[in-house]
Length: 282
Ligand SMILES: [Fe+2]
Ligand SMILES: [Fe+2]
Image 1 (spheres, rainbow, N blue to C red):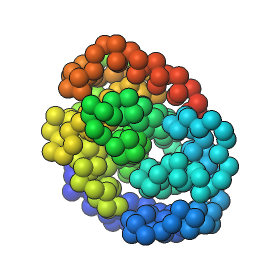
Image 2 (cartoon, protein in one colour; image 1 turned 60 degrees about the vertical axis):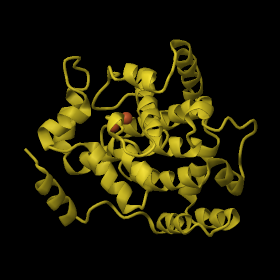
Image 3 (cartoon, protein in one colour; image 1 turned 120 degrees about the vertical axis):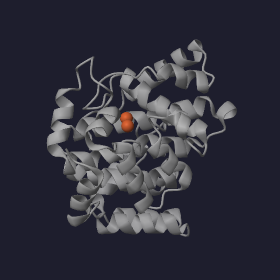
Image 4 (cartoon, rainbow, N blue to C red; image 1 turned 90 degrees about the vertical axis):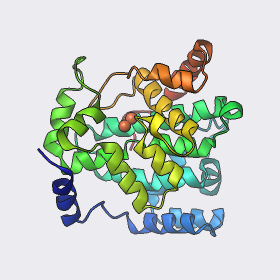
């Protein structure tokens, strides 16, 4: 059995989290410094053509419901916004580089659909919950990022986890991770978020996306991310290592004040817009 020192000792010995590609690291640096214009940012993004293409594809995704195809990179960056752009910088290179690992394409699909569902919920309930739509979408995109490092560092364990994914008697992924490893993907994801200077409210949401009642900052936001995660699973964008909706979905709806009719409406819109997201995109 792995324990925390073993896992992180070997993880740190191997260099810790993989470095971002040079241009993308520069983009993250400029976003954090908050002084770059959109036009200069577009010039920077253009230096990495494959990333630029993925950014354009993202701006044309169902998250933004654009009436016409977006082909201009500056416009794409404006539509996406800086926070989600930073999340894309932290996720696209990782999922692209490791897409050959079994389970990761499915996890990337789940993450993108969770981002969409969290965004839709934030748009719909913006007035009552007073949450930032961009922050909500960002959280949805990165909520399970810690799992990528489990796939990389504890591959045998994750392959066993995937074999249990269909078993209705099995515990949820994060509970099995805690039982076997004494930590879970939320913990590693938070460590990753800290490395890239994510704000405390986002770190809190990364850490507690399976236990939103424990969140210290902006609890509504954490509940919203937990809702997006469960809705994504409900509409078929499942985790590779656990395929069921957790009973806490009822408590989440109650905590967010969602009546059954609101939830039904949310589900329908998530199903409709998620049709534009494909499993094979990277
Ligand atoms: Fe998770
Ligand atoms: Fe998830």
